[in-house]
Image 1 (cartoon, helix red, strand yellow):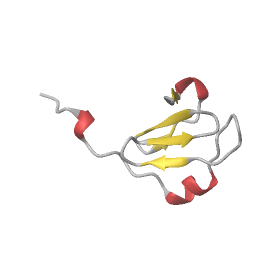
Image 2 (tube, helix red, strand yellow; image 1 turned 45 degrees about the vertical axis):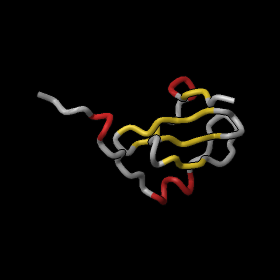
Image 3 (cartoon, rainbow, N blue to C red; image 1 turned 90 degrees about the horizontal axis):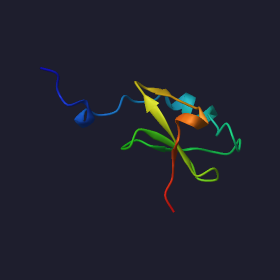
Image 4 (cartoon, rainbow, N blue to C red; image 1 turned 135 degrees about the horizontal axis):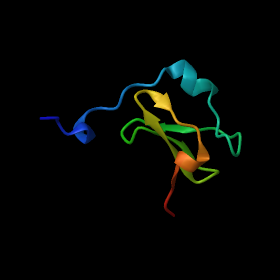
Length: 67
């Protein structure tokens, strides 16, 4: 029976990749939320998911930040 994947730790992202990535909408900086497995664009109010160590930099895949 498959185990619950929500409890598994996120796959790490290459730090060199994090240094060059910017928000595709604002071209602004991103903050890496390791716990949530997301890249946060505070200016755009979006959180881009990271799946299997790969940032998904599509605005339609991003989660809107609350507040």
